[in-house]
Length: 230
Ligand code: DC
Image (cartoon, rainbow, N blue to C red):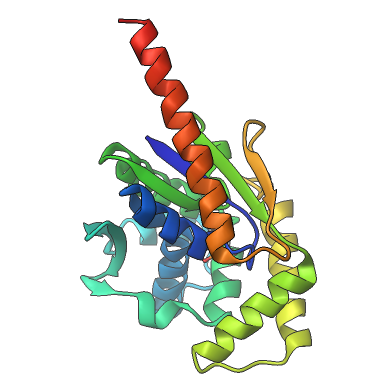
């Protein structure tokens, strides 16, 4: 079974999806980390401003992998876990900019779908329910007010030792929201069959519980249908 969780930056989708996967015993795939890893590789190779044709050829050489380890897909670049290098504002904006380009999106499609074929999966991102896994059995779209999303991001940065001004965090978030939702390829939007959840004012455990109950409900319905056809 594939569960998709999409939503804008700061909607709480990463933390909620990770915990949901753990609760359900599913693998977890953070597809934003894949786009961030491409941004990191582009930054290291000086390819930030390359044209689409040049990017297309270069991407073939990028040693990017999503490797399943203890229920999570680790994103590796040249065999190295990228996590310590991708959670900063420069990479956030570069990932958002590069993710609007066809070669980048096309390149990551196979990696993402392969994760869905490996077993039960919770996949989070921007276009999981609309484009990558359009036939997923359970789809969610998490959102929250702009101010709350900026506050969450601001707290997260402080916890990572990267303190920032709240109004700057809000401005960066708006820029990324606009770019991610207005691009022509796979823009951020809820799938028609997604359950939309506004998490403003709701704590993480509550959100995870709502998601887990909805997935269990869906599993029950699917099991009933399977029994009917026996
Ligand atoms: O989820 P995140 O903030 O780590 O994602 C970083 C950027 O990657 C985001 O601004 C847009 C892009 N992205 C995307 O286009 N499609 C996805 N499925 C996931 C992320």
